[in-house]
Length: 164
Image (cartoon, rainbow, N blue to C red; front, side, top):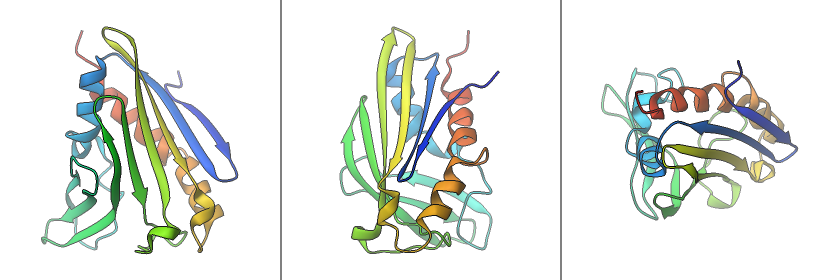
């Protein structure tokens, strides 16, 4: 059974999943628990991934830290509205390299909608892919692949679900 719903367009990829958790838990697992469900192989540094962090504030960093202590910024927190919404800039280009220019960054908007006391619809909308000067089509194909957002969001949902 497919757990996530995927929609793709030229400049966006949207994945939606419903988790068996309160809206507060769904937001907390996505943000504070990001490192608990992020795939260890999805990193930029040469060394093994130690931790992925989303700093809980507008202007905060979204970054990886490898076991050798090196850090690599993936983007910034553009909106922090617990437990309903989070927006991140994404500074990776089509070659999966950092482009620090904010005007070239796409955005990842995550929304959380309570559908019951312990049921939350989570939508991850990675949009403005056309801002990437290098390889916007490659970015769209990569993030819409099974190892991209659909698989990553399914991993998140497995962790976010409250035990029965």
